[in-house]
Image (cartoon, rainbow, N blue to C red; front, side, top):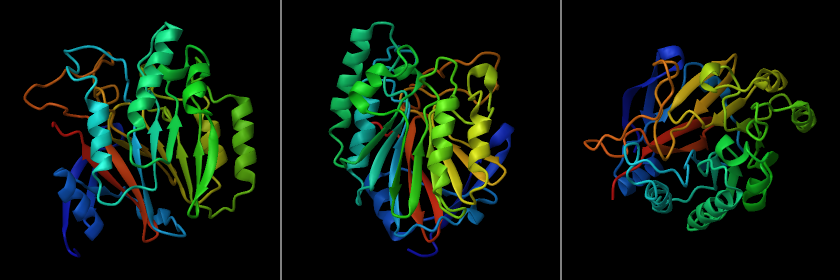
Length: 314
């Protein structure tokens, strides 16, 4: 499938537009045919210099902000349908991903601890229908901020951890268990210790819920001490951050570190500071599931490629 390519334009940082270059490999084409959706493998300006030297080619799927337990027909009249639809789409991929990661807000917030656990149990049951059994979880503030992650840990495990996969070092950070969205000194010390054993040219992928940089602090789209984490990561040549929380695709660079936000699976949110108040975008009956989606991330040929998929009506 050489030579199959196209171009699209996506909102970039601070309202700028970022050109996205698509090149479909044979595997991309087979997955595209299976889903019937539109896929673009994106590269940011300067992104090619990232050169992630994975030991083997692999890809993983990122899903985010499923908000199980949310209700609001004007925002999403199918609140119990979007997560199963996304899982069905992942299960339909011609080649399974190496793993799947949920980058937070698996459930919608509730003050009732019993209901919180009931939502987590149901979400975990639905996620259990994934054919891929290697699933990683991050907490979102809806999951963890009211009890410092206690219920989340019962159902989904640790809120911070690291692992290695085919030559890439993955780090999951928790910037939600603290009600002030802080990473905290203890976690920053843990991160410094984790990075101490890594070589400067080690490919590193950071997974988090909130952005580590100040995207829109007045909208709670920031991590107050996220700059300290970025500072610890700065000496490493090949770092990418994948996060959720803002319910839309967004790309940003802090020096050589690329940050990529994923779409949500319950409702989209407006572009950063594009209106006076942050609020979910109402459901468009003419374009159901508009703005909802998930992505896969592929380490191939010494670079990372991101493919975006929409939620498709049954």
